[in-house]
Image 1 (cartoon, helix red, strand yellow):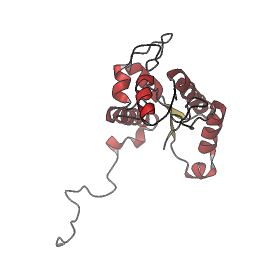
Image 2 (cartoon, helix red, strand yellow):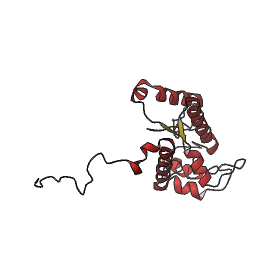
Image 3 (cartoon, one colour):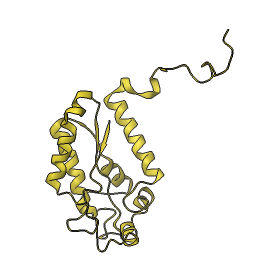
Image 4 (cartoon, one colour):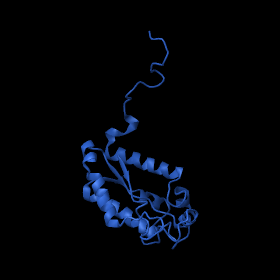
Length: 183
């Protein structure tokens, strides 16, 4: 089970989007979801996914088109939510897919430098490709999420690697066809 929350929660307090969730409340909400009885009853193999970075340049345009005035999100503020997600995962002993770091590494981020996606640095061509409007995933970003998920499954639960899973049903080519005569 993938759990990816925080991208919308990481809006700035007071932004026109109305989606801001305080950081401590975000962490509390993640813990409550993960530890909810209906989740625990299922005993899922859980992968907690960090919220990805944002691209402030593209957000400015998409927010304006939606009538959102001012800055709704920043790269620095969003990083706090990715950090908090990692912290919750660590505290609860969960597997964490650090999508924030995967995107940032692809964007060439080096610790100590301004964050790609921030207006404190030049526009990132990589984040522009990954985030269609500065927040939502492009096809390339979904592919990155898929590849990260598969790598995580193979590393953490190799017996669940779909590459080596047996068919539950007959393969299509040999399965009985509707209306076909049976021998």
